[in-house]
Length: 64
Image 1 (cartoon, rainbow, N blue to C red):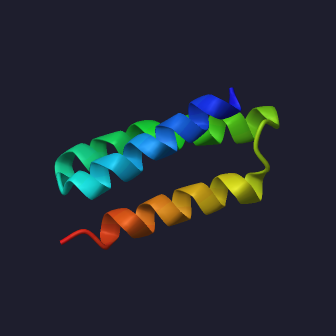
Image 2: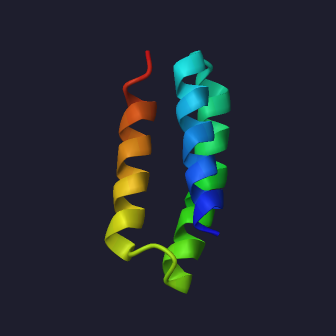
Image 3: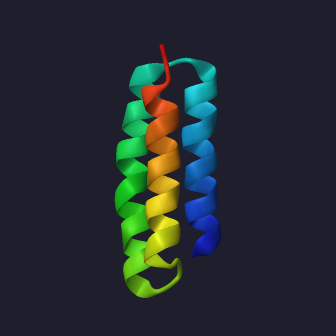
C-alpha cells in the first residue's frame, strides 16, 4: 500500500516536470485522497501525509 502512494507521488512529479499544468492538477487531485486514506489506516503518519501534500502543492504552484 505504501508503494501505491509513492508511485502516485512520482506520477504527480512527472506531470509537473512535463509542464502540463492541467494534467498535474488532475493527478494531484487524485493523489490527495489516496494519501489521506493511507494516513487514516496508519500506513503513513499524519505528518508524513501532510508533508507529501505540502511538497506536491508547492511544486504545482511553482509551475508557470
